[in-house]
Amino acid sequence: MVGRTAEAGRLTDYDAVIVGAGFAGLYQLLRLREVGLRVKVIEAGTDVGGTWYWNRYPGARCDVPSMEYSYSFDEDLEQEWEWSEVMSPQPEILAYARHVAERFDLRRDIQFETRVTAARFDDATDRWTITTDRAETLSARFCIMATGCLSMSNLPNIEGRDRFAGLALHTGNWPKEPVDLRGKRVGVIGTGSSGVQAIPVIAAEASHLHVFQRTPVYTFPANNRPLNDEIVAAYKANYAEVRERQRHSVAGFSGFNPKKAAITPTAVPDAAAKPGPPESGDTPVAKPKRRSRGLLDLDLDERRDAVAAHGPAVFQRYRDVYTDPAANEAACELYRELVDDIVEDPTVAEDLKPKGYPLGCKRQVYDTDYYETFNRPNVTLVDLHRDPLLQITETGVQTESGDVDLDVLVFATGFDAMTGALERIDIRGRGGRALRDDWSEGPHTYLGLAVEGYPNLFTITGPGSPSVLSNVIVSIEQHVDWITDCIAHLDANELTTIEATAEAQADWDERVAEAAKGTMYTAPSCASWYLGANIEGKSRVFMPYVGGVGRYRKICDDVAADGYRGFTLA
Image (cartoon, rainbow, N blue to C red; front, top):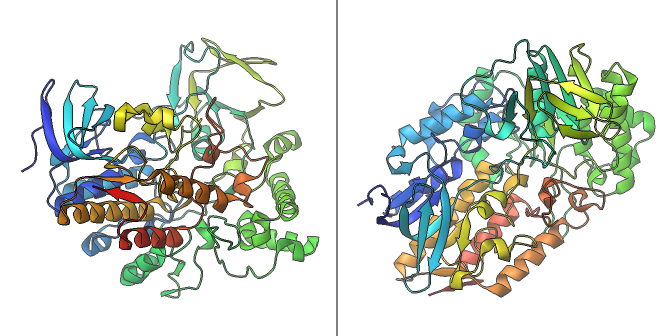
């Protein structure tokens, strides 16, 4: 019987409390119900959807093909849902999450508009006590963090940040009500993924747009378009094989070619490839077509011909681009030539060219008409390296060259990724140990699933797992299934707790770091949010596991098959 909704001052018992009602929280709730657990989900928003609930900014859309960015656990759900575009826009993905919640009657176990403020493990009872911002207290045997990797918005510490008298927005916490930018002077700070998506859409509406760029970005064309019936039908007819290939691929992409209505040998399709280094130990190897030669094996004319034919995405076909600094720089030079070809003003083009860090060190960004937007007469690029931002004022932004008056200021400044949402909660393990303290010099996990000293605490797509380097729904399903099977194993064997050992955690930390060596992710000049470099004072530790979704799945399965090796079960 499901426990009652928590009331202020009253302790309510559950088998499990899940924090977050995004794609991870929804699926975890469904699976735990199936094994007979009493479950409560706590969600800060007013609805389901997680990332796709909060990120409502103009132009927000997925960078994974729609037909593969969906749940695989229910065949009827796969067949009945209709995606409209190759890369789905945010409203459609949110509608999908809502549909899943309704179809499986999940809302009755979700408490909305509530934030978890603390979670503490009681050594005497082997239970977690969870408190909320509504002064509620819940008790649970298992505490499962489905808080998301990109859910804690980052507001940079800019002088005068709270002084602006106009409308200030963050892309990661956009209002639910439509924001009318017609006739408005708008400023956007940041040119990462959300900025690249939002800038062209905002520019088409605003009277004038100032883009304040800190670091130019490498961005590949999204080539988004409506999905045609033939592609949809081919996927739906082959979904079983598509899903199996996703689960054992490098980054959660099947390589399905709907035109041939068959699975191709490609593990990662060109349109959504996540660049990876060659196979070595735990490092992944994607096998895109026509990747037998390195970029440096081509002469300059051949390289330019390849780029002219296929655009910058061609670089994902050459393995040496992501392992050899010389090949990488050769690709970067060709990329800069493309910018010159698109952007009409030579000074603006020069400012937009990424320099000083390698292609492939940061999350790959996909765009629609990003560079073309800077040819518009109502768009001004402000390069903050040449014209530093001094402060935010009541009327806008002040740089060294003067004041820029604005009606709307948009922070497209990303997230405190992977650890931010977890560290926002006061999580205490055995003996009152604080997770914030244990992670002060970087996160430590076993498999990205568990933390030594914190029994029965699970982190879905936590640091140390493929998570953000993959089609995240594939990784979510794998984690949720593993956690559910683990809990079922404990119950079947009358066991109370499971906890990672210090030795297994240390070994996994080392394995995660070793897997990233020799890749552009950890190049000396790379400063990405994978390393926490976008957060002032955050320790620089490479957080995701780059060994690939398929290899990681096998490791997790082997751990479970070997009696949950690396865990203490009591």
